[in-house]
Length: 300
Image (tube, rainbow, N blue to C red):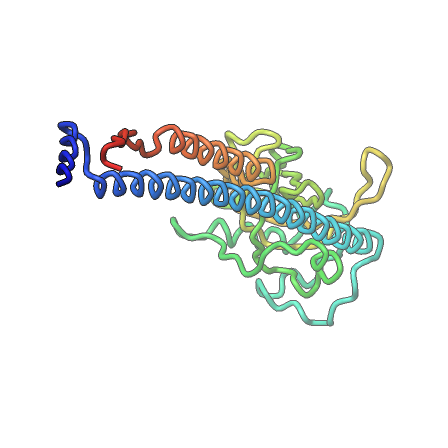
């Protein structure tokens, strides 16, 4: 008779069974593979983000370039029209076309000097009208300032109340009226230039513009009376619109420029890239840890 084989030695205490060992190997493999997939997805996301950021920066730069080009072309066109309006005389108006202010402005002569304007009957009529306004009343604007149109077609706008805004370039104080009109005994002549610094005009103001210095931005509602032609200190001939207003008010200075620009876009994109990179590296450093459990040879 053959002797029976001795039974296999018992497994070491605490050693996993073969099935448990295989499950551990499978878990380690799946965890490592999953972590590799997550890492690839993060790198792909980072690449897409950088690409989109670069494209957005280039597109915004091109858009700003195109916008600036259009603004330059528009400015050149406006400058050309202003020069044409300056060199050309006013177009003849329609006889009897001026009916505002009891037709008191019908005899106004465009391009005439302003030396004796305070004695003009139309001017004095307007001063009396403003002096008789009740408290809280004022001139109501009928149109916005159109420099070229006022110079080319003054008769079509004579007597209209125009909404004005500009920078105070020069002021002549205390031009005496021939006689007091209510609370007014003088006018204050202001030479203004539009906020873009290209179009100038003259406003006689009845209320003293205290607290307004040169280069201060101001606004007013003025009655368009006529155009005025004069010679500048450089010997050039200038034609400008001339208005009469009750008062001017100072415009508060506010920051209206947009902070968005290609440089800001690039900075924002760079900050996003750095943030994503930090998150990505933190994810790499804090990835899932798999316990390295040795498998007993006896279990296999």
